[in-house]
Image 1: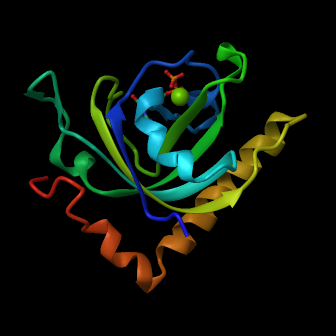
Image 2: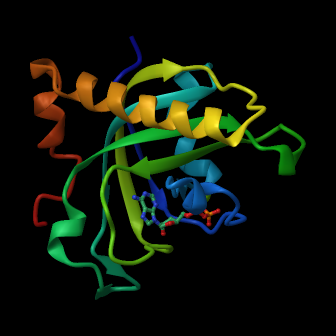
Image 3: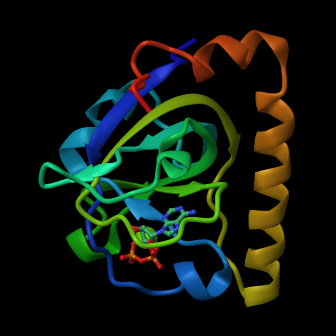
Length: 159
Ligand code: ADP
Ligand code: MG
């Protein structure tokens, strides 16, 4: 099995569409940073842990509590902007951040797959599925076998 998959990259600006007003902002990773995901082929929703760095451009700007290792759900999909030739990953971290963190480094350990991508005819359907994904992720991460990844040396322990 390909998991765990380790990813890291600087959070990029997306089109600012949807994410926030669906109650689900997603930190967009640069394309290069998701090369380790090439070992899996399914697009769709994954779960794992993520950590946002406190610093941006060498200055500490994020409170310590917001740079902990936190549960996340990640969507992996073909980007229509690049004519569906480029895979993109977006991470929703299950935490209330005081500010945006564009330009910060994000590290993630992907631990499992939840479901394929679906086409939504309604906004309600999409929101409902996101809520289900979060519950599934939290429930899966509660398994004792996953505990060790939260303190993996891949993450920054100085936080
Ligand atoms: P964009 O299209 O720019 O990605 P989004 O609406 O998806 O816009 O918002 C994503 C941004 O919101 C992230 O890059 C990050 O700076 C911020 N953000 C705030 N809270 C979260 C969170 N819990 N998970 C992910 N990103 C968050
Ligand atoms: Mg986004």
